[in-house]
Length: 102
Length: 433
View (cartoon, rainbow over the protein chains, first blue to last red):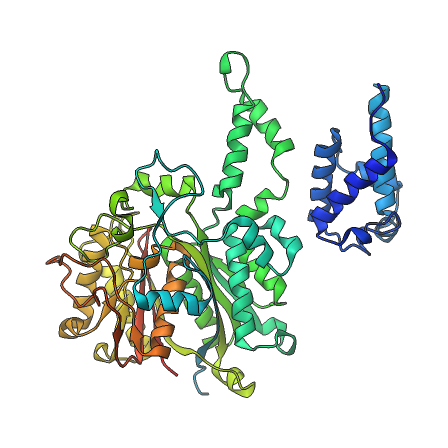
């Protein structure tokens, strides 16, 4: 069974989550926007966004999973650079695709 | 070295009347009761169905918080504290950017009962309902699992008592001593008193202090009901909060927050600040007796009043008015009257003794702060607000309680009393400046 999310729908849901969690203008939610550097994301915001993504898309995200998706053995600075809205969108798409193959 | 003086230079209030210190005071002097029948949840099955809540819902409070993102980590009480801190900081005129951040402290009285907020309670109950197995048997393992997925991960931050102080410290870059005091009904009196000491003993030049509480929710009302301390007079709810009256049957639960900016006097003077009042003394004792009963000899209350007068080097005859703890329970009002007479002797009969709780109810962790606000306003306006709903005198409470009408009179020195569960006693003495 394929999932029913179009790319646009996935983006819109994630955008709404980020806007609500970070209380920022939707225009700031662009694929290249870096969560920590550009959007002022703190560690508690990461927990918040994870919770909302899980509730919205119906899958669990285990600890460190998104970080592993961004890259293994990265320095903290590299993670800050690579942890973007786009990387989160890619991660969600991968998880949805996995769900559809189960 | 000259002793450091401590003045109040900023004030922010959210009371059962709404927002603002002036709004609060204007209602107090008119003797307006903030009592209303509870309408935020179905209280029809509870013994007490009225209270004095802040008349703003959670969304309205959210919009008032300047840092919008932070509201997701705030209980209702924390929001009230942060909003009143905003008003206090603004009207103090203090530029926190020009103040050494390590000389700015925070000292807040809090209840730390964020998990009793209505929305969380409802969420938890739904989780329990959804965690049953066959024959409606509750599966506890499912309850805990469902909490993991259905309770927001930041909920615990709403419950930690020190989070109000943390938010305030972040907002004003207050990097000095930061503390939270949770001592039931004396929380904010002690928080303010300890803030006064921080400045007096040169640990800080500025302290953001006060208290906040929000217990007009099912768990709060049930808790006080089960202890038998709140009035059940639903039929006469507007007149039910009647401190010192012979017919009194308990207190009315109130809600709100007050934040003060306390400042060292010279620090204020150098920046051309406007002091509202000066704190002359603070004292705190414990009855070490019982958890809720007060000893008939009122040794803790008496000693707290004696100590605060002693620290301020003030004779009892110099005190112009007393803002009583005055809850409206049979025990407190009788014991407090006894304690006042022991300390003030004949002068007790000449001092007006009023109870703010007659109008706004008992704000618990914020009670001391909101009552000190009334004292500050008294000094500024030379008016003592009334104790309303006082109709039937009690022979055991035979002082001048400023019944029902406010009184214009010379006021230079005011004593504020707070006594709490656990045998806590705390007093503040302030004077006009």
